[in-house]
Image 1 (cartoon, helix red, strand yellow):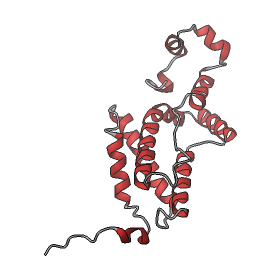
Image 2 (image 1 turned 90 degrees about the vertical axis):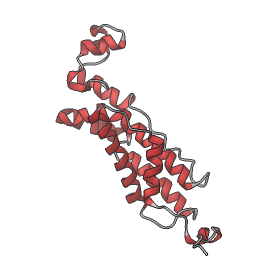
Image 3 (image 1 turned 135 degrees about the vertical axis):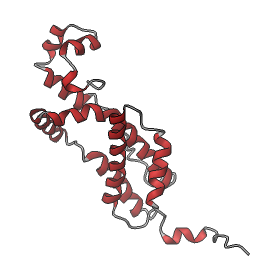
Image 4 (image 1 turned 120 degrees about the vertical axis):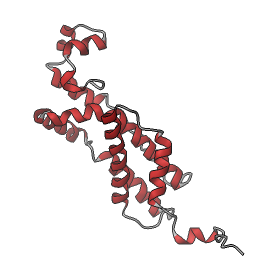
Length: 188
């Protein structure tokens, strides 16, 4: 299903990839839709948003790590997740499964916003709209996953891309933290 998408993945092919018979598949799953929903909810890539990062390391390094994780997460999950939009029944069933689990597509952005808010409260970031910054970063990561799926090429160097995305936001520390920085050399 990840490789070929939902429409092209037959139960015969799924059984072959799983190393079992098609009859065994139907013993555990009523239909292909149920297999797909289970894969989406139980086998989708996991996103590590490391809740304990606030106040450790540098904010920039932490954000670069988190954004690189987002890039990898979306790249791995995008092809199979995109399949749900071609089938309204499947989308509705997946949406309900996510509501039941308290999860959904808002999760990565919300987790990143929580991290940013914690850093603002700790005084390591200037006051900012954490939700907007989180949406910008998760949106960029999702866009890169879309491009990777479309072109068939992997996201080029997720770590370097994460560094560029974070740097572009200029999330400088609060003004009082920057006092210790040397003045720029203006020449003689």
